[in-house]
Length: 292
Image (cartoon, rainbow, N blue to C red; front, side, top):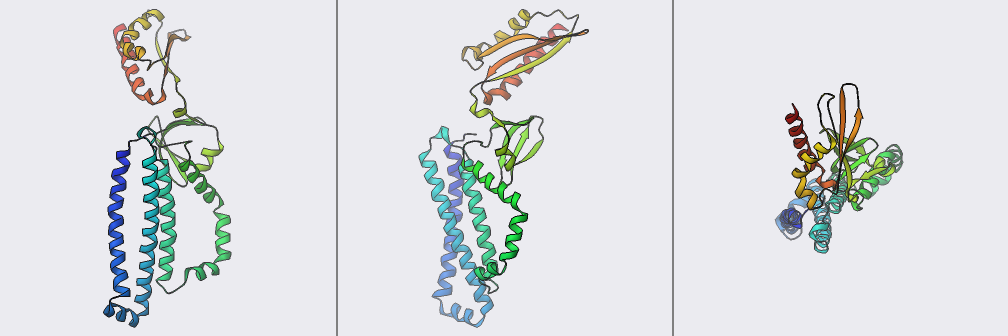
């Protein structure tokens, strides 16, 4: 779903302020640990505290570097894109990557706080790590596919999609799942593997789609196709004139013993569907109430 630059710029400015605070904290701790004699003497007397301070410096330094790269990438992207082309996927992708890197840095810093070198620790766990990788193969492929979705334009937040027989709006994309809100309001978690391996219709890439409105009336209610058209057309005059509705067909969906089924087919752009559906529902209710 395209959004304006200003929304993202506000978010990036907030992150910039947090980044400056982290830099100030880092420089303060670095100054105390390297240049303040009382502080360095205190650390030399307590190796455990020295390890904690070293781990904290590593954590803050790596976090600052990751944040700097993320902010530069985000600002370059925002500068190059026009307002109408802004999609949140790229920013979502680099945020997730920075979160993964920060998690690795945090674990490494936690290990360093106990005086253990992370490389040696990980080397000693090579066999265990290999076993974990095999067991979590599906999770890893889901994560990779999640990043692919984020860094491509196949799907974006706010897109209306149909996967198998489920249709809804993409509300979030995580490393494991794509969160879909269905038309009935229910939330579905679709694995990212399924998103890239199943036939999915993305209505954002469809200029026009046909939407059907079905309704039934008792057989004794006299209502012709021409009458329905004449009642609806004036209420849609502006949309028909502006080509928001490119197709308008009134027909029968079925004739039964006690009722007659009517259908109205309209050609609209996918993003206008909720708005036009609501308008049509009101128009059809008015027509049915008039006939009672």
